Length: 269
Image 1: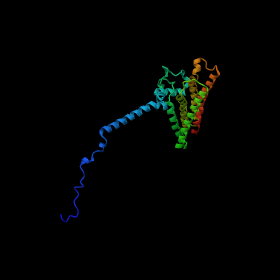
Image 2: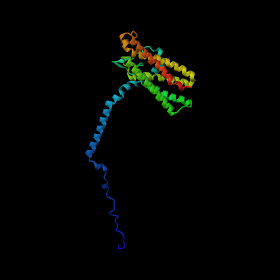
Image 3: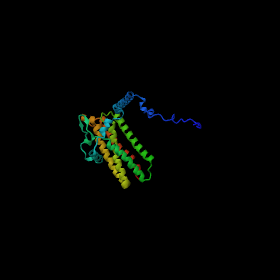
Image 4: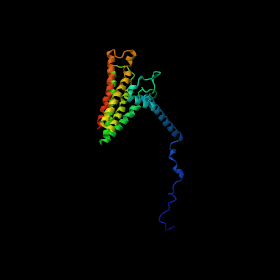
């Protein structure tokens, strides 16, 4: 066309064939990509084995499984033992091949399920008590939880130090002490609920009962642990060292009611 001003370039600008847009997966050859995938899987497997091999150094998972091996029957019997320990006669922990049996088979065995659940329930009941008094706030509830946890840690550390100073040869572990120290939260919950339902009079009556029961429970439980060496020798209080161990047992038991009252009295009005 002699009057055309511009040359037609539409054919030159046509898109290239679809083959030009081959998938980018072909950037790496198949053998190389397969090797990379296999190497990554091998690293993940080695990392898992390393974690499984060293986790017990920091978190005794195997031991913790023992303390949570409970069932409904055990929990109900243990709660009954904590609230009514006077009728119980045999306080000896049962062993099988030098290993204590799981808590679900022995009501005398310490566990962590009840202390952990009781601690959480105590915090919830404390929040409820603060709410009924128009004093609830997340900061105050957090302070209540951290205070209870701090007292528990201080108590366990103080008992460990006392056992070391008195040179008590016992099979009590730190987890055992946490369990025994955590049982008092059951009585604290009972006292707080009584205070919510019946006022101060109900709080003092029920908390006093729970203080007596936790004192008896702790005495009868720990004396078999702390005085185990003396009991094996056939002498319990004939020497000054054994008397010191008995005083330590009574001090630990007497500390439970004091902490129970300290952590609950300000929640009841």
